[in-house]
Length: 452
Image (cartoon, rainbow, N blue to C red; front, side):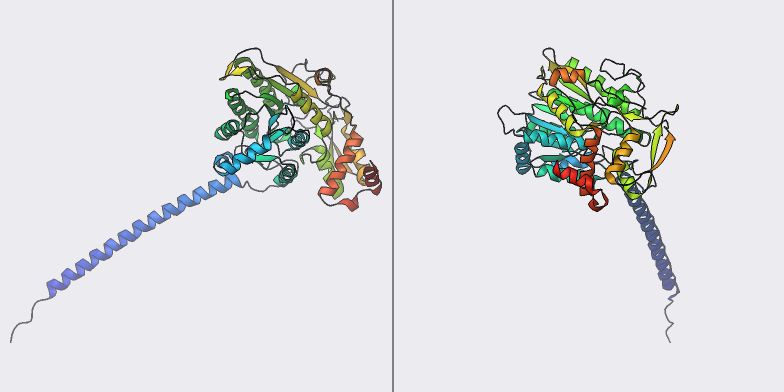
C-alpha cells in the first residue's frame, strides 16, 4: 500500500503565507487609517480657520459695539466674483457717464455707507456720473447697506462690491473709466470700536487710502480727490471753536490717529505725485439712513424699547456736547469741495506743477449737550428715556466739539441751515418708517412732517 504524501510542509507554507497576507493587510489598514485621520484633521483645521475668519463668534457686547470684522475680508473674492466681462464693463460705464454738459465722472468709495449714499444720490440728481465701491462689511448690520444699495440702483447708480485694498480691482476701474474725481468716503468708522479691533482701522484708513492713492497717481488723467477726514483729529485740542489752524497732534483715539495719518499721507502724495487733494473734517453727521453705532440712532432704538441709555458727563461733571451736523448740510459741503477742486498736475505718477491741497471743517457751528439731544428724542418719540448718567470712560471720546467753518464758507459757500430739532424730526420720521414702528410715535410729530 503506497504511503500517503507528506502535506505538513505544504500546510505550514500556506499558514505562513496566510499570516504574511494578514500582516500586510493589517499594516496597509493601519497606514490607510493614519492617512485618513491626518487628512480629516487637516480638513477640520482648514474649516475651523475658515469659519473663525468669516463667522466671528456671537457675544453679549452692546449693540453699538459691532462684531469684529476685517475690512480686508472680502478682498480675496472681489476680483474673481465682481470684475466681469463686457456686461460688467457696460454697467460700470453707464453708471459713471455724466448726463449734463461738463459733468463729473465720480468714483464714490463707501457708496453704500451713510454719507456715501447721500452724496451719490445728490451727484446723480444733478447729472454727474457716479460709480460706487463698497465692501459691505459687517461693522454694522449689512442689511442697511443693502437697502441703501437698492435705493441707489433705482437711480441708475451701480455699486461695485470690492475692497479698497484690492489693487487689481481699482486698477481695472480706472482702466475702464477716466474718472475726473474721486469722493473717498470708505473708512473704518467709530471711535470706541478701535479698542475692540484696532487692525481694521490700520487696514482701511491707512493701507486702503494709500492703495487708492497709488492707483490714482498712475491714472491718466489723474483725478481730483476729495476725502473724509474727521473732527476727531482735533483730539485734546482746547481751542474753541475748532479751526483748521489749530494743532492736531494730540489724537485721543486710534481712529483719530489714522485720520490724522491720512492727512499727512495726502500731503505726501500731493507733494511728490501732484494729486489734488481736499480733506473734509466731518463733525458728528446725523440724519435719515444713518449709522446704527451713532448715539442718536441707538438712543432712539433703546428709548422705544424701554432700555436704559448711558449719558456721559466729564470728570468735572460738565455736560458732553457735540456739533451735530445734518446730512444734507454735509452733502452740500462735499459737492462744494468737488466743484472747487482743481485738476491734479501729475502725469505718469510724477508731479508736473503745483497741486491743490486743502482741508476744511464741515460742522454745524452750534454745539448741543447730549442731554438736550435726548430731550428732543423723548418729545418726538412720545416716550420718556431711562437715563443713566455716568462719567465718560477713557474710550477715545472727547467731551466737546465745535466747528469753525469760515474757510469752507469762504471757498465754496458752505453754510449749514439745519438745527438739531429739525434734523432729528426728519431722522425719526425715517426711522419709524424704515423699521415699521409708526404707531408708537407721537401723531403730532407725524402731522408736522407731513405738512412740511
